[in-house]
Length: 331
Length: 248
Image 1 (cartoon, chains in turn blue, orange):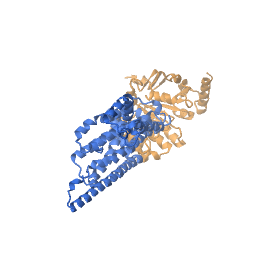
Image 2 (tube, one colour):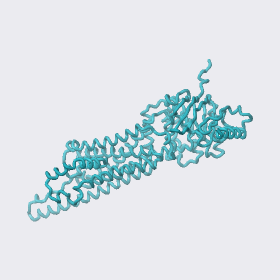
Image 3 (cartoon, helix red, strand yellow):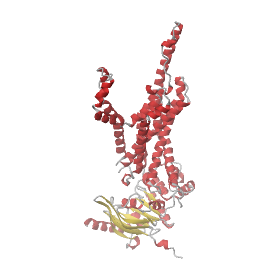
Image 4 (cartoon, helix red, strand yellow):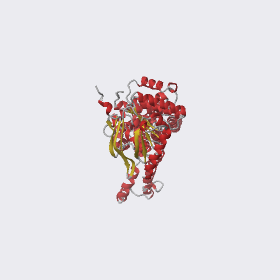
């Protein structure tokens, strides 16, 4: 029978099958619902606090007006609705990453366990085409997952905060969504690759978890602990009343130590994702209300780290040949 | 006009071997399987039968030697080999959450079959599993899965079909059905390379056999050349050649 299918069509066939399977996978559906719910809970908690601030301000303003005093003596609370997404971003960092790791594992384990991998690899397609289709499927899953989360929270934001979203806010949400897709796609690729390469997919998943914990939680904590300024509440320099110039002079004497400490702290992809997203959404106070252009310029290092992390892991998965001894779940 | 291509074996192995470091998984193997034949590859567990199939289906790369399947070199023309083979691994399960039809349509599209829907209907009818078409594969018995597995292997009408222990775990009805199917496919000109350790399967379906022991081919002949080639005679032959190899 003549073979008329192009390589792209073959990859699309694999990607579409994955998408159809994901829609029937209870784990994926529960994961989407759980992440959306967790994001909403964090978001509603933030909204309640914001409404509390607004109500307190309104009461104080009314009282001052009643007393015939100047209302400018009290500052109006800042009403930046995107700041309410702090919890949502934090849920994506941890819960989203765990979902991505497990989804990557499931994508590899399902095909190894069912012998479907052997059947696919005896079809006329290159290994890299299969791998690229699987990675694209993972990125697509992350895109859908985060689209659900950001759409639901984005629709509720004006209603909960009482402040309408501008076109600029919508653009910031799209950038945060894109950064999230990059972050989760990289972690999915790690879970998928290790589950495909390991002797058993479960061992691959455990290794992926260990690596993720190391990079995301342990390394930044080590870096943080190594900072002497963090060892005393309020900061050691502040407690000892060391002037800024003197602080810099002392730190210069520990340049190598500071470089190592900074490197360990910077190793966390989650930190880079957080720094970029917190800045773009104005969650971090120093970026609140700032225009997008300068923020993106300042945070391009975080964006590049995220990009290289995802492309790097995806590239390794793509280039590493599939070991024929890993075609089944048992080997 | 004489069809010269008919003389070219469907499967030709020339010193094909595989090593994992010091361990020799398959000693140099030279073998021809003519077109439209059913070749039975016998051997105990771990003898190297599945390794041979994985080499011939391009899942593994040989360390030495060469082989051609359907006229194409397994190392340099892997894509052409894959386009012309069907493969049914042992214990195939396919995608549990998908129906028979969805599984088959996926593999038909992946094989580049035009009008996959129509072809899937044909194969479902042919294998007598049309009534299973909309049921999820996850709920199937081993025998039903094996039939769906065979269906995916012949969807694209391959020249050569590789079956790895196809009757393992099947009930007598399933075994009988599979044998009938093998006979039909051979009659239509398909070459079948079948791994098995069941002598009854060889006696009933195969036209030639090879016996593999510890990664070496220790016997190869037409089944009809073995005097009184019933299951018992084959068993005697098998035991004697394997014992000789064990003694070596």
